[in-house]
Image (spheres, rainbow, N blue to C red):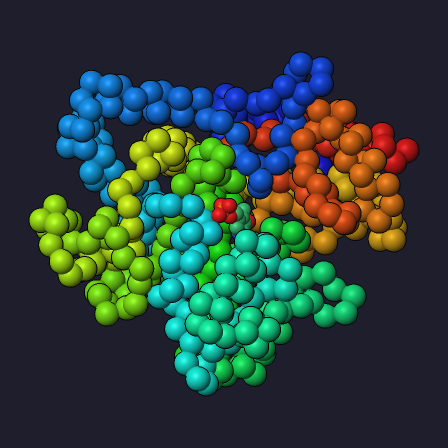
Length: 419
Ligand SMILES: *Cc1c(COP(=O)(O)O)cnc(C)c1O
């Protein structure tokens, strides 16, 4: 930490983006140090005007808004495809924005979890986000199977907090022909561990399984190359690192190799039907090529308008490579502040991997003593972190709106607490 936060902020090429967000006030009325972008990203100033434009279109045009205006609602989802594809390293055909995350996870599993008498296992990370656990349990039951027979959970070795890629690969090889689908969070929400998605996909394909990722904590956080990694399917929410508002819309990826596979079993709706004859209202579902063929309903214009404004910010900032460069610096600085406390692991330890390639921006701190007290102390100092039972504090410095001064503010608060 040779440079001061002031120097780093003054030379930060992304510094001006902080002004594009509303920073909630802390207890002293000054902007808080917001480290909760992994739970709910902040409100972009452009979001309100983006929604107002759609209100205006509705007000002035009524139903004609589907066909007229700058972004007619009828084709709204396709206006997001290019930026979404760049965000996750995909081709525009491979992505679509629709619904919410858990809904999309189910829709994708209908297509990519097709158990047979011998190939019916699902591999997940142990302690996956509860919604993903419930989704998989219910998918097993949907096929008349017992979730306990279906779901195999990966757990860290004794004394370790995170998973080793080699152990994941070994488990996949062991399951072999019995493995139907691998579904893992790209970044684990609790530990902050980022998985080697290319290696996991390769291992899964080697035994003939489908491989998908829940990218809730990875989209907008990591550089992703879903197409090149050969991932089969993925979905993510847009309200965490993508700042698109509570309950915001969700993104979906389906690899190009399935783009022209109308035979793939799926739950269908009119918005996934061949657009050229959608309004002929004919019998017989014929999906659009690509991820768009998984759509059910007409697009949710208001959440998508916010998302369009948010994606525009990411693009203007230079996309994920630029965000990731600053992100690694912020997280490294946060990590050195915590290490400088010199506390024994019995008191406090960082459970997120130290290797930047194995984490996103978040650091998860396991606080063995006085955890809740520390969390409340941080809040009193205007540091908004996030508490996970039983005793983990998650801190996520986000490159679009967090400054190096914010990171130092956490460091100073921690020092005061422990001195
Ligand atoms: C945040 C999160 C969810 C939330 O699901 P919603 O359907 O958006 O409510 C699901 N899975 C993971 C891994 C998450 O991090």
